[in-house]
Length: 403
Image (cartoon, rainbow, N blue to C red):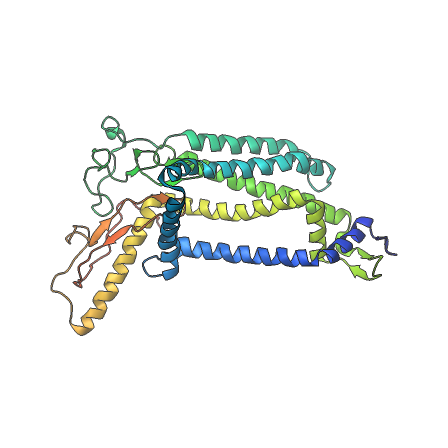
């Protein structure tokens, strides 16, 4: 049983110390879990998005060997028919996760957050009404992003989308092996939506839609709205929690445990623990929205960057693969010069084994939000060392003039 201290600290603060001391093991577990989750997230980002599968054992294992092994084991366990049905359900899995998280968070705000906003003196009550507008924008952008098609290249619609030249590096004049139509420049066949998408960017599982020429603006709007929503929600919940800390002067409160008789001065950790136990739902939403604000903001900045360069996600990663190849071949060539083992033949950005300066084939693998789902450049099996020449030029990229 806890009482007020002689300094007149509130009973809730006295209750805090009892909970804090009785849950020390739980807090150690929570802290350890948080550190482990952070380390796992950093490892996941490195292995799946940063590491080069061609040179990194970690990247190759996490992006190729492990997924292939797990898929084979799952196929052996449940069979091909069940696995086919699971794949159908998987197509909507990200949308279900999105709706669960977003609608669940908004439900917490409507049920608990708005009540606290009305009580708080540190945030205006008009945010209760602006929240409904943000929620409407969130759901509307999601609806349009999911249901606006990216465009479809067919024999009839080809003149509408055929307004880019072939660069003979990423795009050559050839026939789509699936639809048997001419592959126009910057297009790609998407196996998820089963259409040839003009100016293909990537396939987004969160909206279960390919992103291309006719819906890229809606995808950017969807992304921008969610960055604003997460930032706005984080700020609103922070003001509510900050107001309670200031109004009750929690950082300067002192209290004692009636069992041990020990007097304790509140610190930031104890105050956070108190707020988390008193407002578990709001604190959970605050942490989630704060993390997502950073993640989505970085993702939005990436898309604004490639948009300013007139590039797509598909082209960004393909050119990254080409530059990586060129750097490796240049290093091999320069090393071979020292031992005079270089072949007399040379390649350049036009005349080469495949007329692109890239002795291999750029494959049309699936491209998701964080990059390609496989190896983009199928390397040549030739052991002959040749000068790769100059790096091929991206004719679609916009070079921003320096001010």
